[in-house]
Amino acid sequence: MRSTLILTALLLALPLAAGPSTAEAAPRAKPPVQRTGPAYATREDAMAFAEDLAARRNLDPAWVKRMVGQAQNLSVVSRLMQPPPAGQPKNWNAYRGRFIDPIRIAAGVRFWRENRSTLERAEQEFGVPAEIIVGIIGVETIYGQQMGDFRILDALATLAFDFPESHPRAAERTKYFRGELEQFLAYHETARSNPLAPRGSYAGAWGMPQFMPSSLARWGVDYDGDKNVDLARSTDDAIGSVANYFKGYGWVTGMPTHYPVRFDPAKVDMEALLAPDILPTFNVARFQELGAVVEGPALEHKGPLALVELQNGGDAPAYVAGTENFYVITRYNWSSYYAMAVIELGREVKEALGRVSASNR
Image (cartoon, rainbow, N blue to C red):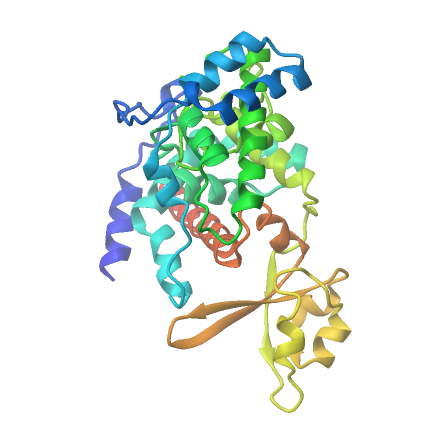
């Protein structure tokens, strides 16, 4: 009850006039946190990487070496990349509570109202519902309020050259982050922009939707027409880029993300149903043969389904039948918990927006 009252108060406090322009709506930057560490200028492996990158990408070798040399090894980044302690039970209710609360919902309503025309344009052009775009940006950065304050060059260099060796996927992740550092430097050299300026997450993600450099290069959209893709200050670019990302990964317009599911105790085969994890694998007939029961519109679903399990600590798990669109959301973050948080935040914001609109008539 208390959270409902808080949400109502926050929503009623929203202005009735149209929202500000993109530039006016952009969040004010906080003074950057100064994080320092040893520079990579004296590291042979880092300088060899810079020389190889310049040769392969036909970039100015002096510029690349200078930029890599100015990157700093931040020990806090390596620590933050360590996996959580083994044995910690997953808890969907706790996870959900981190992202779906009155303050974030009210911020989502404000974001939607201020960017309604852009969201409608993106939905029409890319086929991705506004609520999914709103859910992503809300989960990632609370609509630009928390975009990260690590210098991205430092974060990427640290993870490219000093990824924690104790991590079970250290070799794979080192290769990945070297690729991201390459994309980041190539982007800024081509754009003649300063790679020392952007700040974001400790993993090197940037802007309102927290794109990695490879995602920016592949899916970034200049949606405000200023000949620049700025995911930190242009809400139009952020909205268009998220929509383009999902379309690129196969979003099917009009398809639900999931359906309710229950089980037939007489024939349920949980091991078989959960074996593919979140990858949609079963047609409706096979899903039901294995004891997962769906009803209503789900019976007419033409594509494959996955049984998505959301553990609740010591309580019974929750389950849904995930579609290909649910799987597309996990391309943003490989987690069914993340995908469900995006879906539910977008839904909560949409419902709250409807209540505000009705009260203002």
